[in-house]
Length: 232
Image (tube, rainbow, N blue to C red; front, side, top):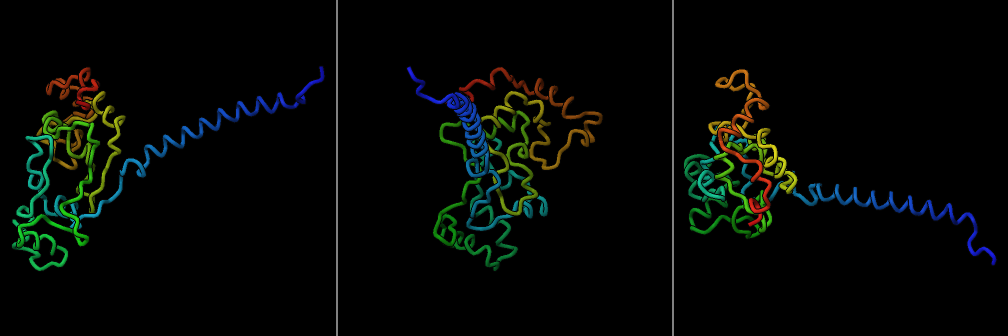
């Protein structure tokens, strides 16, 4: 019986198999890169707001504490968003005629929520987890997780953006290794705290202080990897 395929087809078949492996690997790499990119995670993307509020100015420039605007952050899952009254506490006295703050004054005078030029109501959330993820601000603060850990250096953000990916692998890194992130509770709201520069804890580094705080705050890593902690 005559040979149906030319012997060179053996080489072609082998090359096709190896080529398919590389193509699949490349597709997987591209998919992973896209999944971790700002296109999917929104990390680093500035959101349009009714008023271009600058955390850099208010936090670093004026020294306003996080809790002044985010009033419920220590006692509830949600950090809370500032009401128009909170803004007008200062801006009824300063920058009273600034065009930039017109939406705030209109909200104050009408009693209606703040709106942007397109009619969108309210502030646009920058950090938004999926509905199937449970997150509680108060428990994280109680366990010594600083605002900077999740939100980044907001005191250096003229316009607010999402600092981290907020993906599950990012959360699990902290849940599995909390000693790398926890800090003293009295430094939770500090933007520039550094264990090695803390005058109250001379000789300490994050590597030496972290495990002590994990034990002191009774952080049980074996429980933090349980799916139920975040998916209830």
